[in-house]
Structure formats: C-alpha cells, structure tokens
Length: 420
Image (tube, rainbow, N blue to C red; front, top):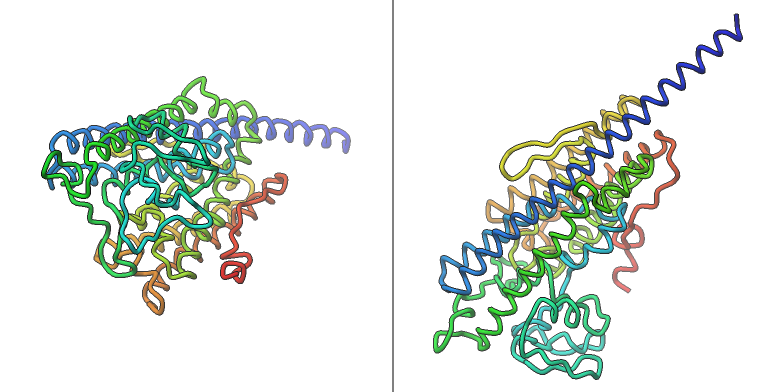
C-alpha cells in the first residue's frame, strides 16, 4: 500500500513538472512576443520621427521644430519599455549602446556654450564640433568628414578614440540636435535651440546649418536601421527570440535578470540616486529635453510589463499572455501578491514624479540641493525600485534558480566612492 502511494505521488509529480515546463515555454513566448511588439513600435515611432525631421530640414520653422520634438518624445515611450530586455539578453545589451548611450559630450557634435569648456584630460575630443569641421583628427589620424553619412557616424565618430562619452549616434544625439544644451541648471527650462539652426543662407544661425541638417538626417537614418535590426531579432526566427524560447529555464533567468538589474543598479542607482547625490542635472537621462520623468516612468512600466506578461501598444491594443506572475503564484501566491503590490507602489512613485514634472516641477529642478520636495519625489522612486528588487531576489530563490547577479551602483552599494 505504501509503495503504491509513492508510485502515485511520483506520477503526479511528473505530470505537474510537465505542466510547469509547458507554462515556462508559454511564459517565455509571451516575453518574446511583447519584445517583438515593443521593438516594432519603437521602429514605427522612429520612422515617424524621421519624417518629422525631414520636414524640419526641408522647411525650418517653429512648427516643424515643435513637431520633430514631439515625435522624439513619442518615440521614447515604447523604446524605454524595452530597456528591461537588457542585462539578461546579451544580444540586446551588446546592441543597446548604439541607440541609447548616455551621457554624451555634446561638444563632439556641435557648438556649445562657453561654459561647457574645451578638451579635457579624459576626452581630447569633447569639443571637436564635427558639424563645424569637415576635416578632423582622431587619435592622430586625419578623417575626412566633408560628407556626413550614417557610416561615418557609426564607424568613425561614435565612441571616437575609444571614449564612451563620445556618443555620436542614437536617441540622445538626436535629442541634442533638436533641443540644444539645457543651460538652466536646476532651474526651469529645457534646451532652446532655434529652428534657424536649420535655416539656409542668411537666415542660418550658429553657422553650418547645411552640415547640421545633414548630421541630423544621417543620425536619424542610423537610428531607424538599428531599430530594424533589433525588431528582426525578436521576430519569428530571430536570434534574440530563439535565445530565450529554445531553453525556457534560461528564458526565465533572462526575464528576472533584466527586471532586477534595471530596477536596482541602472534605474534606482545610476539614473536616479546618483544625480540626486550630486545635485547634477547633467545626470538626467534625457537632459536636453527635460523628458527624464517620462524615461523613468516607462522604464518602470517595462519591468511591470515583464512580470505581468502584458503590454499596451501606442494604438491602445494590448498584448497579454502567460506570465511570470502565473509561475510565481503557482509556487507561492503570497509572493506573487507581494510582487504585484511592490510594482504598483513603484509605479505610483514614478507616476508622482511624472505628474509633478508635467505640472511644471521639472526633474532637473527636483535635483536642486536642499529641495526637500524634489528629494522626496526622487527617493520615493528609488526606494520603490530597491524594494521591488528585494522581492525579485526572493522570487529567484522561490523558483529554485541559480543565484542571479544583478547590476549594482556605487550610489547604492558604496556611496562614499561617488565623491572620491
């Protein structure tokens, strides 16, 4: 009798294990489907941005500049929700620097205010001003930059001389070319580049308007091409999709790695706590446009999307399927409740930052030294992100996964090092 019960128990365990394996397969398929949708939406909004920039270059005016800026902000909404696919997916992490690297030494690209300074010991090219100089020298080599092309930007200018802050491509290079420098410090106001920076002839301001237009068109074309690459990688038959769906257990690890690393080291640490510690608006993620509140919000939403297996597209349609939440609830329903509640708390805190910024209290104003209201708002987001990471760690343990190393940040793990 005892032996028969053990046999039955073993059979039930095998059935349950098979069902769990099937659930994991469905979960990582949802994860890949949402990635494909997010990158497709990022591509579509970048193509809209490209059209708006073409209109600006062809007919510079306040209206076409405003339209291009609005298209850039719209393009950030789906893209920021993809950042949770970094860290756990090497294919994404290796590629991401092409489109979203920051901070950048903007003097590499175009004119800057005198307060910016010139070359530094860390970066001799910090004020190179490619737009003003058709012949440049990089690491002792003369470069013909008379014709600005996507290839020149990608192969020669980006990370020139091996320096990471020589960012010549991606969303933030475009942002700088649309807004210009934000010279307001922790006071109200974003960058205020005039549309006449793209005017031709005698109406051109700050010189080299033809080359500035050529750079803006080329860097936007490059962004679209880069997003086409990643959209294809997550589509049916794509390399990134295959990497997570062929081994569902590893796919689950990738999901949790992305959630934990973005929540903790990247967003709570490098993007939020560090800027507050330094009271430095240059540490804003979208520092030229004052759009950082949205970047933080949609980064957080991306983490929530992965856990719940749901994503709302720009047209309002939703993709939803088997989720990590389902797997956690099956393992420990109270842990699932905890994770959902902490994600909600974080999104409320990030939403409070977003609402305050949209009401006129910009994110860089929140970073001002001694601004108690700003500090409370930013730290509300930081604390929520840290707290949800602790629950992600408990989920890793509950699912009996190998220990996952999440990205860290000196601002959280070793604060004194920030000031050394």
